[in-house]
Image 1 (cartoon, rainbow, N blue to C red):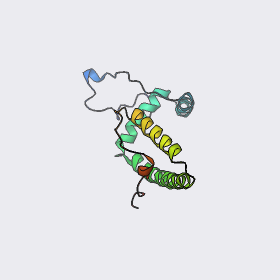
Image 2: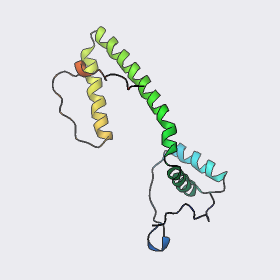
Image 3: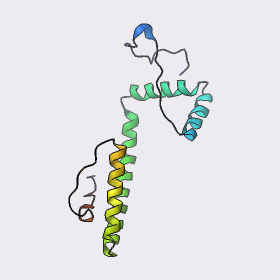
Image 4: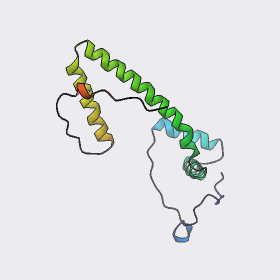
Length: 136
C-alpha cells in the first residue's frame, strides 16, 4: 500500500489515468485515528482511505459480510429493548408520551433518509410494535 503502487487502480481510470478529488466527511476524532493509522504505514490519511476502500472492494465485499452478524445482533438487542420499553410505558398509562417518542423517531428517520414524511392515521402507540425480530 505505498503511494507508487498502481495495481489497485481501475482499468477505466479515465483521461490519462488522472484522479479527481472527492470529499468524505469524518468526525475529527475519526480522522485523527485514520491519520495516525496511515502514518504508521508510511501513508497520508487520504492515501490510506483510498487504498483501504479499494482493498475492501477487491475482497468481494467480505468486510460487509463480517459486519452483518454484528448488525443483526445489534438490531435484535434494540428490538428487545424497545419492545420491553413499549410494554412498560403502555402498562404505566404513558400512551401519549409513547406516541410523541414514536412520532419524533419517525420524523428523524425521514430526515436522515431525506424522504418526505409518511402520512400516518390514528394514534401511533397501537402500531408502535416494531414487529417480530428477524428470523435466525
